[in-house]
Length: 359
Image (cartoon, rainbow, N blue to C red; front, top):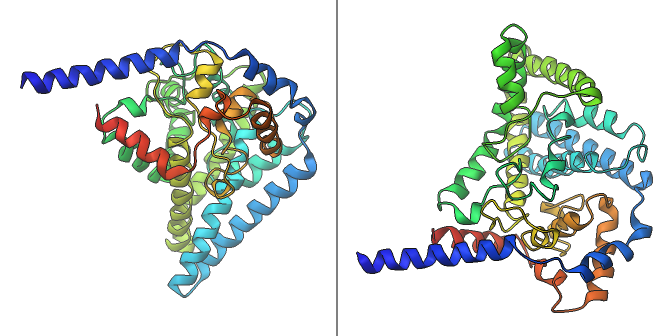
């Protein structure tokens, strides 16, 4: 028993040293300078890319949902549902761009995204805007105040499947959030405060508490939440008019898209920080680039360059592949920049899973 305890203590100390090393990583000035200097001409969002990409993805998603609902053959419904889930996932991923694009770059894009995807899918952008930027704050990343961070690699092995199951149930949670809790909150102030604090952010940190909105965000929050609430109530009542199939098929496709996104989130970072503030270089090394073309399916809209995104948060998604090529060529093999490049999802999942087995 003493030998087992000694091995466990040794493993814990090894992990603690690795976490401390990550948290105290000195800045790589050459990498940070190259990331900025080599990409200045790539920083402008191009409406000619954003609009066609988003509109085509949304149209394909809704076409797939319609076919899946109406199809009489199971294999047709299954194939259409898979296409719809991937297209819906891509269209939904533009919420990430909404939090970073410069004001005035894409007039009307936020409104159209919310009307076509945010409200119909019960994921209005206020759930993400004002939240995701905290994940990029130098003093917040990887700490208890980061809404989008959990030290998953240092948690128990069962935490990984639980992380995925939570995403599977996301459509049910959103229906309850907007179709039940929002209306009740209008007449029960304490419930409303709890909803704002605990259930108004697309966050993975269960300890995160959101502050009440102010200014422009408050006005945006109000109309988006009202629209999502009315739509959620309509969905809950829809089986009375259309039967259960449309609602259940739509929820299944939404769940599939949410699970793909959760798997992508699982491999967006190495999740090895234990709560200490980190340098920008440390944040970069705890993040992941998967530049392969196949990764664009499960990490669309630039999300396969997540580590690079932490160096250049405002870089438009369509510019990230070229930015990655330039920086990689300039810094060469063996550089700090190269250390965050990985080959694919499965090796990353295996790496994180192996780490949890040591806990």
